[in-house]
Amino acid sequence: MRILVAVKYVPDTDEIQIDETTGTMVREGIPGIINPLDLYAVEEGLRLKERWGGEIVVLSMGPPKAEEALREALSMGADRAVLLTDRRFAGSDTWATAHTLSKAVRKLGYFDLILCGERATDGETGQVGPELGAMLDLPVITYVSQIEDLHPPHGGKRGWICCRRLTEEGYQRIGAPLPALLTVVKEINEPRLPTFQGKSRARRAEIQRLSLEDLALSAQETGLRGSPTRVVEIFYPSLVRDTVVVAEPPEKSVERIVDFLQKHELI
Image 1 (cartoon, rainbow, N blue to C red):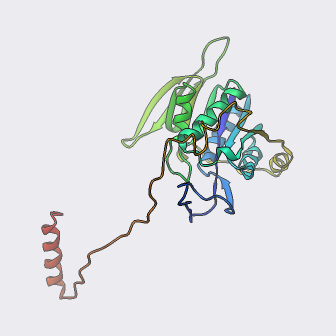
Image 2: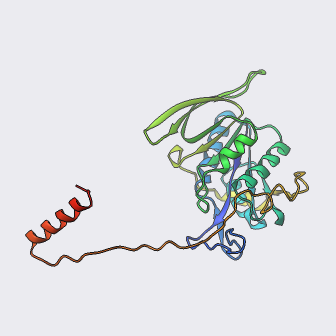
Image 3: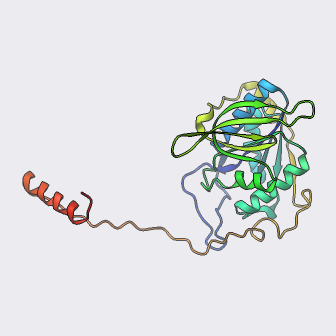
C-alpha cells in the first residue's frame, strides 16, 4: 500500500498572537512542534504498513522550520517526507491550504490512503482534511476511531476500507472504496516513541521541497490572495458576571437561592 499522511507544524505555546493587519497567526520567533493530533495519523499509517507493506510519505506545508515536524514523523518510521514551502503560501486559510496540498498530492502520484489528524491545535477547525479529500474527489471518513477491515487493491480490483466512526451519539460503522481519505481521533491508537536508530535516520534524511512553481500554482490560488476567508475584526471577549453575596443564616440563604433559580426559570 502507498499511504500519505498530512502533518502540520504548529506553535509550541498557548499564547497565540494574531497580526491585526493581516488577521493571520504570528509564527515568527515562536518554537514549533508537530501537531500532536497528527501523531495518531502517523502511527496508524505505520501500523497499516507493518501489516500490508508499502510506503508512507508524510506531507506538510509551512516555513522551512516545518522540517522539524517531518523529521519527527520520519523518526517514527515514515519512509520519506515532502515539504511545501514558499513565502507566497503564507497566510493561506483552510481552503487555500487544502488546494495547495491537493496539487502536491497529484504531483506525488497515486496513494491508496490519505490519513490526517482530527484537527490542528492552532486553528481548531478540522476543515483541511475533508477539504483535501473533496478536492481530490475521494471518499472521506472523518473522526475514525478504528479501522475495522481493510482490503488493499489487488489484481486490478479496487480496495475497500471499513471504519468505526465516532459521533455525538456513539459510533457509526461506515465503509468506502479506496483510495480514500480518513481523519482520525485520539482513540484510534497510542503513538510510538521514536527509537535512537529512527532519530539518526531522520536527521540524515533528505526532505523534498516543493515551491509555488513546482506545483504549477499561481499566486492568486494560495496564500492571502487565494484565501476566500477574511478576518474583519479581532477582539478579546469580556466576561461580566452579576454576583450577589449571600451572607445570611443557612435557611435564609437557601430561600434566596431558590427564589433566584425560580425567577430565572432554572428550576
